[in-house]
Amino acid sequence: MSFRAGIAARAAVPTGVGLGLRSTFLAEVDRGAADGRVPFWEISPDNYVARGGSRPARLARVAERFPILSHGLSLSLGGLDALNDDFLSGLRGFFAGLQPPWHSDHLCFSAHDGKMLHDLLPLPWTTASARRVAARVREVSERLERPMLVENISYYLPLGSSPLDEAAFVVEVLERADCGLLLDVNNVFVNATNHGFDPLAWLAQIPLGRVVQLHVAGHEFWDDERQDLIIDTHGAPVRSEVDALLAWVVERTGALPVLLERDENIPPLAELLAERDRVDAVYQAALARHAAQQATQGAA
Image (cartoon, rainbow, N blue to C red; front, side, top):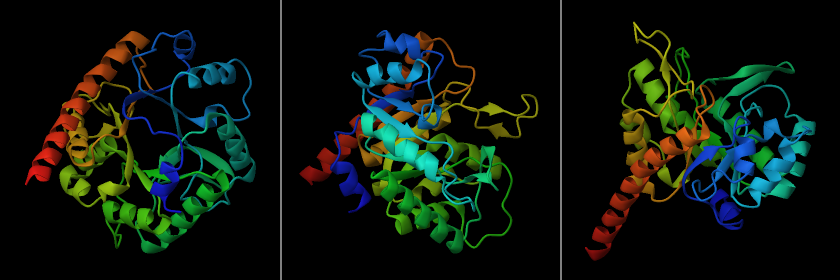
């Protein structure tokens, strides 16, 4: 079964601009503070699997009112260590209650020799690396019994000489794994700015039919005076350049779930909802242009 068929076989997929469900405002959301304001929430199951306390019960109540998407941090799909059997079993059990339409994780490695590195580190852009990662993505999908998406990451140092560029490497993984792409347009902008390439040229290489979800976020300068390196902190409002990349994609794909990430400097929920509304206006305008283009092509 292809990844698209696997998604279609599950519950309806949400669209629009959602938010990450963070512990700082989970209790507020549980009490109904965001009802009618957010089309879906994205969670990191790494923060729930084998955890106690009040969070699981609150999440269960939120999931009764909102669709939930799942985005992981610690599979280390590009790592050399064997996949963690206990963690995958925990994920599979956790999903039995929530039934997210897919699970996503990063196209990176984040562990080595049994130790978590607490970072998302880039992979060599080679066919051998793409082949190995794709095999692990397929294995995870089979073991979790749901489609997998991989996310393009931000990186800060050149990887040396590689036979592929990043976009070609991403495409090779997608095709070999027959998986979907969680396209983070902020990561595209961060990398393009830091490493001096055209973000639209990068996006033009990506098969948009494999884009299943989008991420947008804010970033900050490493040094506010020099402004020669930007860091993907998820700690600031989304910049207009990232809005433009989001719009470029949605104009070509149509409706998708878009996640506004905020993991640092998290503002009060009311302020975050206002930022969500601003990004949603960008999304809705792009969606209207997509519809207009479709109507024009249909009339031709």
